[in-house]
Length: 503
Ligand SMILES: *[C@@H]1O[C@H](CO)[C@@H](O)[C@H](O)[C@H]1NC(C)=O
Ligand SMILES: *[C@@H]1O[C@H](CO)[C@@H](O)[C@H](O)[C@H]1NC(C)=O
Ligand SMILES: *[C@@H]1O[C@H](CO)[C@@H](O)[C@H](O)[C@H]1NC(C)=O
Ligand SMILES: *[C@@H]1O[C@H](CO)[C@@H](O)[C@H](O)[C@H]1NC(C)=O
Ligand SMILES: *[C@@H]1O[C@H](CO)[C@@H](O)[C@H](O)[C@H]1NC(C)=O
Ligand SMILES: *[C@@H]1O[C@H](CO)[C@@H](O)[C@H](O)[C@H]1NC(C)=O
Image (tube, rainbow, N blue to C red; front, side, top):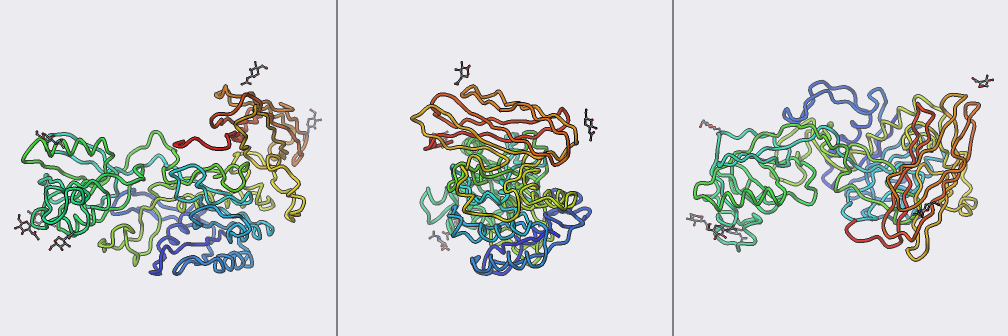
């Protein structure tokens, strides 16, 4: 059974967020699910046969006591995996953080907690899920993307971002700029299509260009037929729009601005969204909260990424279809949402699969299997934790599937990581270490470089040593153990104490 501890986004009591995340973790098969035909196909959760227990912890706000009570209830109910798609805006000390505490209790009972990394990823050290016993999940794109094409009267076609279900009633529409169709606003406000700025009689039946994504709501209220807008911060994500609309990056927006300026009879058409093949996927989403870990520098976070961009999943028909536009009064059973909230239940599904194949595996074994893909490294050797012992261990020697260390800029680099692995492959097997050679900034060695196992569950230890000159910028590499069939990858990250801005 997968437990979903769910976030109901706001005080309105519409549980859309929980419906979406729960159905991603463990929903049943549904043929021909789509958002008005967009992203159509068979929808299913990570483990369709799993049962879901949902615990609603957010009513108006998400109270620490409610979060802890939900963990207690889920543990008492005997769940196998917990997935939790909520968290603080910034990382908190673990002893003050209900999710860190609740998930520690869950781990002691053999239950892995999968947690969203956060949606604040526009700078380093923004990850808010930091505890070593959590599986912290960032969001990445997948090979199916959603785009909305714009055709200009001069024949130019431009791909924009939005989830636009509307079919425009016609082949071309007059195109006007917000700044040219206002009666009582400054040029700056009108360019943004600021609330109250557009004159209905000047925009009715036309497509309006706005320099700001939020302008879509004003264009809708003023009776425009469509909107072309500048993307917000998350320019790599398509969001559901309440009218024919498409969002463009600055360079493409300029094409439209220039076109409007070049003619007295500008025209445009906005297509219904279509799905495309993202050839560069998976890419980490702009919004996905980033490491390094602001609380325990040497535990790399997030642990993994999973699909969290433009995810189609179940949705409450009484919830507003687009959270950004209150005027949108449509009702749907499936909706497209983006966030680490959407990626965490994907990872929870994977964890539930591992758990069903290996019911005896510990939470850290499951987590390690997902992070390294094949082998098992136990973070804690058994399920009883002696915290006094834990403190005596160097963080770099915690048996974590990834290796990270924050170093001083002023001294030559010298660091080592001790790890122990457990053989869960073939009884007789020999694994050889390979270091990703793409970094020439340091020398990384593994001792011993070969591990020979004679039986199942046999444990072997090794030490990874990193040496080099003073570290000026982040070094990232990886260690891969392979027997020629299985590949077990652990990221290695070394970074200087104060990170350069704009990384
Ligand atoms: C679409 O255009 C047709 C023909 O001009 C018109 O009859 C119909 O009412 C329009 N529908 C909408 C939704 O505007
Ligand atoms: C909107 O524009 C029309 C046409 O220019 C004008 O007659 C009208 O007064 C304007 N409305 C407002 C509220 O300013
Ligand atoms: C502009 O005028 C309209 C119509 O009078 C009004 O509804 C709107 O609030 C005004 N906008 C601003 C920004 O003052
Ligand atoms: C618009 O065109 C006019 C004349 O063609 C030009 O002077 C002006 O700089 C242009 N404005 C913009 C914003 O490109
Ligand atoms: C492993 O290999 C050794 C020697 O090559 C052999 O004696 C032993 O039976 C093998 N064990 C298994 C489980 O295959
Ligand atoms: C790596 O090791 C080689 C051989 O010992 C040495 O020449 C080189 O300078 C080292 N590189 C770094 C970055 O320390």
